[in-house]
Picture 1 (cartoon, rainbow, N blue to C red):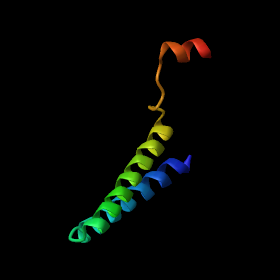
Picture 2: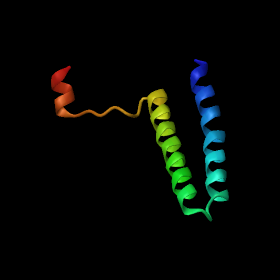
Picture 3: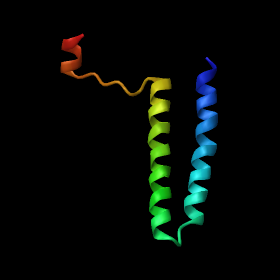
Picture 4: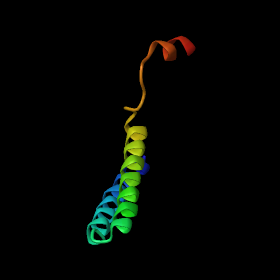
Length: 68
């Protein structure tokens, strides 16, 4: 499945560019806050995407076992 490779190939450069933009706007506090929020959002989406691809986002709790 090529989606894993494409997803990972897209995630790394996007995150790097977001970090670079955040670094370059660090003097203007409002811009820095906005760009850091976007950077953390990209990180969260990347984590979610990778956890979906490699199936480490599931938990084995008693409630999950009882329901199905």
